[in-house]
Amino acid sequence: MPTRTIVDATIPSAGRVYDYLLGGHHNFEIDRRAADRVRTLIPFLPKLMRLFRWCLQDLAYELTYVRGYDAIVDFASGLPTSDHLHSAVAPGTTVIYSDRDPVSVEYGLEILENTPNVHYFQADCRYPLEYLSRPEVQSILNGKRKIAYVYWGISMYLTDAEIKNISKELYDYADDDACMAFYLQPYDPESAVGQQVMELYSKMGDPLQFRNLPSFKELFKPWVADNLGYRTMEEWHGVESPLAPEEMHFFPDKTVGYGVYLVKGK
Ligand SMILES: C[S@@+](CC[C@H](N)C(=O)[O-])C[C@H]1O[C@@H](n2cnc3c(N)ncnc32)[C@H](O)[C@@H]1O
Image (cartoon, rainbow, N blue to C red; front, side, top):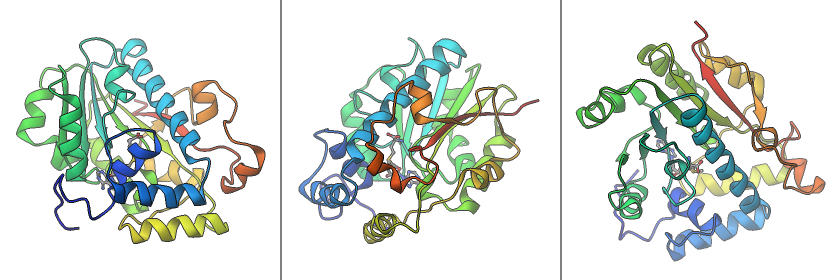
């Protein structure tokens, strides 16, 4: 992928497309056009994305206020707008965002404006060990008691082998009381909409991957779900589906996705 800078507004950026769909202002014309094409295919996408962000806030609360994690390492973060993790964690929590896209990182740092305890680095989430070993990350994490790792809204960009590698690297690296929070999306790749969406993302240079829930469970091994198990996004946030019944045909499991807290189970 060519290196992009914040002034390169000629290629849509997944992070800025996401920001636009969430109603944000950190995007360019090229992103808005790509987002509008996605929205034409999936008109309910903004509703879905808002639900995902609410669930992300539930997760921030659960991990820090309820489970006592004092550091969150978030992968493939997108733009850290005001509804992202750092706005919902317990005071004093360290949040380290990262994204592969240099434009998102540059914009992200601008949005954060030196917010205390919040960091943003460029990193490829497929290689967590390389990232976590970096001196700048180590110097932030040193002394933290419990670290939670978050992969939210990224599973569709990862191949099976990549998810397997992430699970293994983090399992070997993390302390016994660590947690890996994951949001996973089972979609129907055979549906006409599924095909068109896949084609559009392929053109943007971000081809999508789809798989079912049992396949995910296999890829996460040896991590296991904690006692809450795999919960649908609707259960996670305690709401009815924001989608109309006719919009659900895209989702073979009759849910828009699952969230899970993966633990070592030792
Ligand atoms: C759908 S957004 C999700 C943002 C955020 N996690 C959330 O749930 O709101 C996906 C993000 O993943 C980033 N991304 C895609 N592949 C990546 C990779 N291999 N490593 C790091 N970031 C990646 C994109 O740049 C984009 O910002």
